Length: 77
Image (cartoon, rainbow, N blue to C red):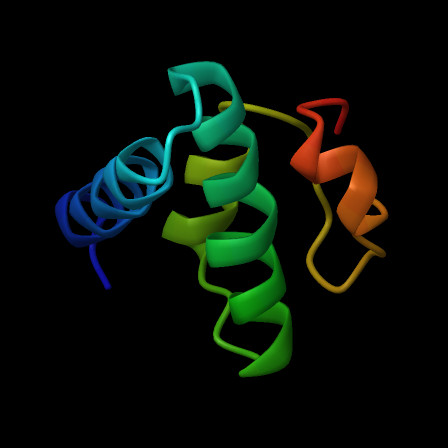
């Protein structure tokens, strides 16, 4: 995935969560942790572009733990 594809994927994920009634902020948190970090950890697909993208939001190191689902769901991650 290049940067443009990552952004499009992320934006689609945010839109999905918003369509389920979440605020933009909460949808963003869920997209970061559940749709990006968790998925990329699971399929071991981290690239420099993905790391750079995630680090816009947080200095995350690939394969570190992710917050508890309840914290993500509350927007507290």
